[in-house]
Each structure stands twice: as structure tokens, then as C-alpha cells.
Length: 218
Ligand code: AMP
View 1 (cartoon, rainbow, N blue to C red):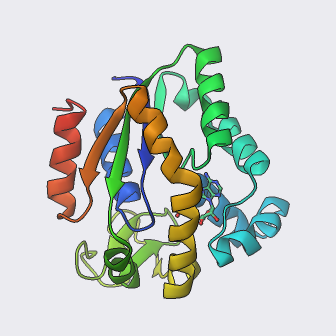
View 2 (view 1 turned 30 degrees about the vertical axis):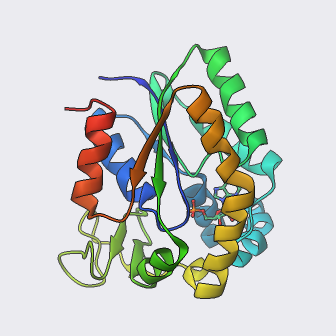
């Protein structure tokens, strides 16, 4: 099994979640997305969910301390021992520093940071068709990546739903938060020589090919 750490960066609707899952399946490494962990907590009405809900619905970032603690906790599980794929983390400089410190402590290295780009108008068009599985979190698109049976997850048979934060107004907020908080990380990883830039405008399969070839995944 291949090891190492892969980070997926990009604005909302860039397709980073879809591509992160493809790399995770191919390399046999766990896919860790704080957004998924937080949504599950919101659905379950846990204390974490109650704290995170307002930020998420408004398209704002959940406070760093909370996100860092739940994500690093998840990354300590045995399945993440030799590596993992992080999707939607880090999103701020503070998160990046916390991740890098934890990697150093564990002697794990970043193999690549995949940065998928997409303009805001394309994101809005895309997100209106996005559907996610309530049970396993798999992501589909009504036009670009439809499930075999409408409304039903191909992977687990779960029910598909539209995320509350996929409305146009919230997407615009998420984009501006992304530009302010997350874009500075692109420069950081470029300087480290880890950045792989991909345009997210092409089909899922074309983007997948570009990413696999840049990461030298056969
Ligand atoms: P995502 O599924 O990655 O688009 O995340 C959905 C929402 O969860 C975001 O808009 C934030 O409110 C929250 N969230 C996810 N990841 C993070 C993170 N790394 N830092 C802060 N908030 C996050």
C-alpha cells in the first residue's frame, strides 16, 4: 500500500471532494473531510454539531481550535498510520501549521497538495445540481455525474439530498471566505514545491487523469 499525505485545496464546487475520494480509493488511504465530520455532527445534534451549525449554514468557517481538534483526532486513528487524504483541511494558516506540526511529530510527509481551481460563476452553476448521500456522504451531480437511479446513492443505496449551504448567497460568502483565508495557503505549498495545480472546469474523468498523472499514480 502506498503511504503519504495528500491535501486537496480549492474553492467550493471545484470538485475537490470527488477527486479526493478517487485518489483515496486508488491508493487505499482514508479520506478525511472535516466538512463531512461536521455535517454528521449537525445531523446527530451533538454538542459539536450545535456549535458548528450556525457557521456552516452561513458559509463561514468553523473556529480553528474546534476544527483542528476534531481533524487531528480523526487523523490519529490506526487507519491513518501510514498516510491519508485530507479534503477541505487545512483552510487557514493556523490549520496548516497545526497539521504540519502533527505530521512532523509522526514522521509523515506531504506527498502533494492538489489545488483545483474554478471561477465563482461556474461554481454557482455547478452547486445547484450537487446532491450528496445522507448515509455515506458520496457526492453526485444531476447533470455532470448522475447516480444510476435518481435520488439514490450508487455506493450504498442511501438517499441523496441537497446541502443547505449550496444556495447562491451562501456560496458567494463561502467563496469570499475561501479567497481571504485559504488562498494564502496556495503560495505556502508552492514555495514548499508540493503544489499541483489543476483546472476544475473539465469533466470528472479528465480532471482525475490530470491529477493521477501529476501525482504519478498509475
Ligand atoms: P466542505 O464540505 O468542505 O465544503 O465544508 C462545509 C462547511 O464546513 C464549511 O463551509 C465550513 O463551515 C465547515 N468547514 C469544513 N472544513 C473546515 C475547515 N477546515 N475549517 C473551518 N471550517 C470548516
